[in-house]
Length: 279
Image 1 (cartoon, rainbow, N blue to C red):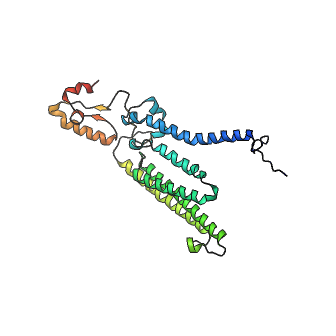
Image 2: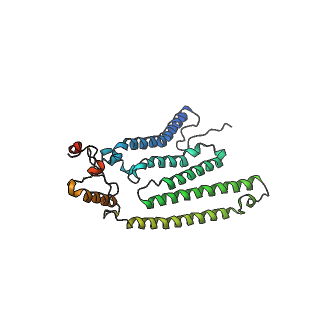
Image 3: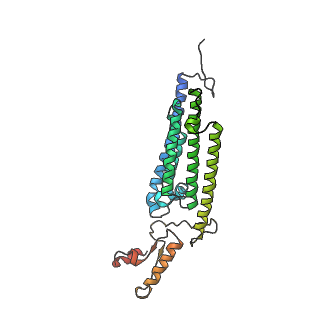
């Protein structure tokens, strides 16, 4: 008897026919379009926002794309694109590795988690300290899950391929439940440790004397209108006010991190061009 297969979602389409091939090619196209297209789209939008964000100028594009960059410091405003690339690699790209090499998938995913955890701990891209702490914690938890999956795969492989072999001689675990219990315990410890760290960091940041919004308990997001360069222009009499406005600027920089304040002794390059700074 000749074996015939049909599509699960549409039993009228026979597998291997021209109709099936066209549907399969269309599905492959959409599968490629979504991950690659979303990454290219996010990267393009963030690249277009570079100049206005650097000048702290609010435009229609920066307002529409705030969900991509508002949580990150200006230096790492593009971090969301990197985060999306990491997710795509862990949830999609590793599946391109043949199923016969499933362990290689776990190895690649583990290496990606290791690299990402180290990088995010070093650069600390988030504006809020507690977000940096939680980001490191979640990365480590994911890393522990992949390590547990690696050990589990090796444990089962030893039992299946080497009859009579004791996995404890290689892994130090005689039972699979021991690996699972160990991973659960480590994950719980990491979560508790970093949760406490996030709370402590948030309290320390709250103690820093800065101006904060009542609604969010966070410093205001400072932006500059189109065509403007400074938030504040310090005007004074040179003979009597230089020291006073210097102190005022220093205090405001502490109370409002990121504020751009013009002071002639710091920012004026040519005394003859003073009027050009005033509109």
